[in-house]
Length: 387
Ligand SMILES: Cc1cc2nc3c(=O)[nH]c(=O)nc-3n(C[C@H](O)[C@H](O)[C@H](O)COP(=O)(O)OP(=O)(O)OC[C@H]3O[C@@H](n4cnc5c(N)ncnc54)[C@H](O)[C@@H]3O)c2cc1C
Image (cartoon, rainbow, N blue to C red; front, side, top):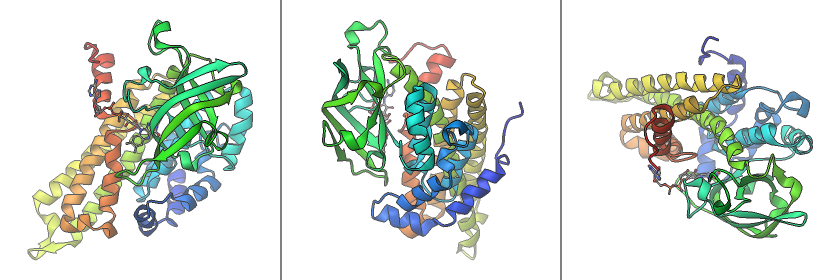
């Protein structure tokens, strides 16, 4: 199959751009300044059906693949917006579509497709164990017709703007499993029922305008049918979804990278210092050219990941490498853009500092760059496991 390119999916690109035109730089700046949630944008995107892209058509969605979903998120960021407010819904959907029971899918997917309900949150990370996910300490213990949840999570995003959350917890103690990746399970948590009844939420003020929280579980009771898939296989399900997540984040970074390159190019052509455009200086134009090359190269790996995922082929290697390359390229593009703008890069009204902060996140979340390098070293290069 020929590799897809930026020129593909023009109808989706034009549709998303048309919607984003109503949510311009001033809109995103205002949301950022008041540390708000882009509620009207998220509602408009949902009503236009874009967030239902990957829900199969029999459940009311468009039945599209990861390629199309990635184009939607890329375009939002390329237009100057921040897909961080919606991407959770895209990749959490994968987990439900691939591993949920028929009853869970019939109950939830049509409501997600129509926009009546949001599934924006995924609770994995914990304060004491961090990247060492299989050692997480939140437990789910079966008692009668309930699972009882105790523990703590950190950095769990969009909980305050979601109706449901996918939660990873340990159902079999670490000491009783053969492999540490076994004995973990995922649950669908109805947030309205949970908050105040065993689950509490503490927002974390952070560098980006990203709604994220600490969660505390104190005997939260979940019905047995909130388990997704088989008990004990949750880590495998989460990993499966992470390849989709990494590919989507790569596409967002490509969108950011293109926004930075274009913004820098325009400014370098317009800004006159020493009686000539600053872009005439190689010291100004070369970093922009370099950023362009790196963004376009990362895009090729993103398409490989999308196509492998959509074809049902193993996509772990390409998804990880796409995320690594794209996050690095968008960060380099952000630096070049800020430097090109000189002092004005720091002025909020130019939007560069906001996008600079937003794209920086992707070196750390949803997986840090070091852990991708460790994955490549171990799984692709057959080097000893480093942790
Ligand atoms: C804004 C924001 C939103 C987030 N949203 C979510 C969310 O919705 N759901 C969720 O579950 N999580 C979320 N996260 C958590 C995110 O996935 C983690 O922060 C990230 O995976 C890193 O984990 P950590 O912060 O615990 O870092 P740690 O595990 O403490 O690591 C700290 C540093 O040490 C490095 N390091 C650790 N071990 C090794 C090793 N063996 N080799 C080399 N380097 C190593 C890491 O790369 C990192 O740079 C979010 C985080 C942020 C900042």
